[in-house]
Every structure is written in structure tokens, then in C-alpha cells.
Amino acid sequence: MARIVSLGSALQDIFLIDHDDLVARPIDKGPIYGDILVGSKVDIDKIAYEIGGGGLNSAITFARHGHEAIFMGNIAHDPAGEAIISILDKENIDSSYINFLNKKSTGTSIILLDERSGERTILTYRGASAQFGEFNEQDLDLIQPDWLYTTSLKGDFDTLKRFFKKSKDANIKIMFNPGSKEIEEHKNLISLLKYVDVLNLNQSEARQIVPGVNLSELISHLRNYCPTVIITAGPMGGIASNKDETYRFGIYEDKKIKDATGAGDAFGSGFLAHLASGKSFKESLIFASANSTSVITKIGASKGILSGKEQLHLMPIQKI
Image (cartoon, rainbow, N blue to C red; front, side, top):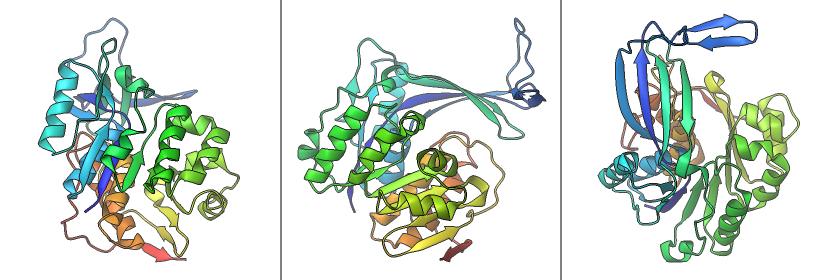
């Protein structure tokens, strides 16, 4: 098994679940979620307290797979932070590199979820998870991981560069799943890709970084910057390429979406969890798709995360 550091955010997710008040309705500029009048009082059917954040979600995938998972993220000494520490302990994830910030609260998301359609609107207070400059890349010398898995650092390119450069100097492999803040500054993002071993994006994000319309064009351009690239395209599946193989894949199963929160994290971390276990490129893509599919059938980003011991069935995947 591998030692994997997850660098990213950790939040408490509070789900407000309803079947009739939180329904999307169309207007001129796009759908409005929730037909709720200002000043009204709305009865919610259910409430659920979960945890989330790209760094935390990925660490859970690695730990359940049997890897030695280390989480790096910021939280606070508050009830939400205590809930996150409790989950880390339960999942056997090393939390000794967490920073506790005194002047911020732990990041929290309020998720308004339509139980019938799976549609959701997320209200997020980033809090402690909005900054990452306190982390010291020299800690990687103490941890000596095999992989650094990094999700969005909210556009903190200084911290990304410090950790990526240190990882390359120490022969630590890097998988990167950037977020919107990194995508917005695509020139800075491209300058980091020389350090990255595996890049994971969705189709919309890829189009903001390189020219191209279809998946084949996008991945061809991105392979000029990074040896292994995965581009997902929602219900259309995706495409993945490394120096030896290129695969076009569909979805693992056509399941009713209960909650899509964490689906992207489940795909990316699922791929690395399987790859770091010695599985093939193709097998890792299949597990990534299965992990993502499982997550959307549960409320919360972590309940559906697989362990890697499940018996998986065939899915649409073709070498091209």
C-alpha cells in the first residue's frame, strides 16, 4: 500500500432536505432553486450533518482502500472542527498535520437538496479552509509520502508551487484536481503542470485552459503539459490518456442521483487509490467511475465511498 498526503479543504456539510419547497423553476436568466418567499417560514423534511471538502473526501477514499492517508487542511476549535476530527479518527486518517486557526471558524456548507430530483444549491462559508499559506512543504520530508493529492487551494499558487516543487525534488508523485480559482488563472495553472504526474479536470474546465471543442482535442493539448490527463464529462463519461494508453469511457451505472456532492472528488481519489494499489490504468478508471457512481446514491460526500474490495462489473470503456 502507498502513503498519500491529501492537501485541501475540510468542511462540515449541513443538508436541508425537502421534497416540495426546494424545486427548480425556470426564469429568463436560468433556473431559480427553491420557490421561497422572503420572510416566510418553510418546514424542511429532513436534516443531515455530514463532512466534506476535497482534501477530506479524498483522504477517506485512500484510507478505506487501505493506504496510509495523511490529511493536511485548516479547521478551528469548534463543533464543526470536532466533527471532522472524529471522522478522521474513525477512518484511521493521520490528522497530525492539521492546522487549527484561532480567528476563523471551520468551513461549513449549507446544502439545500431537493430529495426528488437530487438538485441542490450550496451556500458555503469557507472560513478556515479558505487559506493554506500556513502549511510547510518541509513536512513532506518527515512524512515521506509516495503521492501528493491536491485539490483546490482557492487560487493559492504560492503554496501550490512550494509543495509541487518540493514533491518533485523528493521524488513524490503528484495528482492535481484544480478548482475554479485555479482554472480562472489558467496561465499560472499551466506553469505548474510541469510538476504534475496526473491531472484531473472536467470538460468545462479543460476548455478554459486549452483550445479544443471535443474531448480528443482537449486531451491532446493537455498532454503537452502533463504526462497523464483525465477529463470527465458528466453523464457522457470521459477520456483519459497516459504515455502508453488512451481510453474513452462511459459511466459505470445509470443510477438515480440522490446527491451529487463529492462525485468529482470520488472519481479523482478513486483513480489514484486503485492506481497506487498496483492496478492498471484501465482498472483504475473503472474503479474511479464506480466510486463516483456509488457516492451519488447517498446523501453526503463520503457515505458511498468504496473500499476497493467490491466486485465490479463491466462498463463501457474502449482503448483508442
